[in-house]
Amino acid sequence: MKLVLPLAIVALLSSVLTAADYQSPYKLEFTYPVEELIGDLLKGPRGDWKDEASVPYRDWYDAANQQRWGKWGPAAKHFNAPAGLATKSPEWSRQRIIATGLRFVGYSYQHHHVPNWAPPADWPKDEKQTTPVVKCLDCSNFTALVYNLALGIKPTGDVQDQSLLTAAPGPGAGRTIPVQRIEIPARYEDFEKTLLTGDLLFVKSNKGEVSHVVLWVGKIGHSPDGLPLILDSTGNEIPDGIHLRPFKRGFWYASKALRIIPEGK
Image (tube, rainbow, N blue to C red; front, side, top):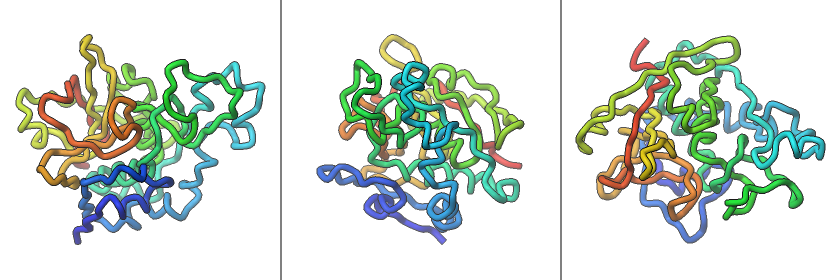
């Protein structure tokens, strides 16, 4: 059964709504019921935002931690693998990645390790900060969080280090999973044939350096003009923050791609 979800319904999966002046034209078509994909995040303790960090919530705003954490706030915890992961298909895992990421649609862009960290006014700030320091994530901490929360796989949150991964911790503590590099196709038309849902696609700046990372949505995404979709957090687009966006020809300067979820068992 296919479940076609306009983003108005997708907003029910997220903790906050998108900006009132932005109406997304994009749709998603999951082949698994949402409850099967992320029921544990919607109703279980895994979805408790106060359990996102490596330290208890009561210590998030301890003044003694200001100098140690700075603008980044507490580090993310490493989640265990979700129940029954070993019995699930790779396609289920891929769709779970996107469904998990949608829970944060509408969060702003900022350099945080955990999305719901909202420091007091006197906490150290990023000098480039343009959005309120509340409910925010940058691009690579977003992709790292999504894999961690969805599958218990915890890539580094640094975008350049993330782009160089050959293995990632998880699923769960004490394990590692290989990370496969995917060759970027020469033609724009071949991206949809090459990349799979949940792949990490890295984007380079005009200086030729890796500067951004997005989640490839793949065949479950649909746009009015037929463009493929990505899910990311960025401060350079309108609206900023975490949203579904089109992968436009000549707009995204793709550098490399990584596949964490293998194609088959």
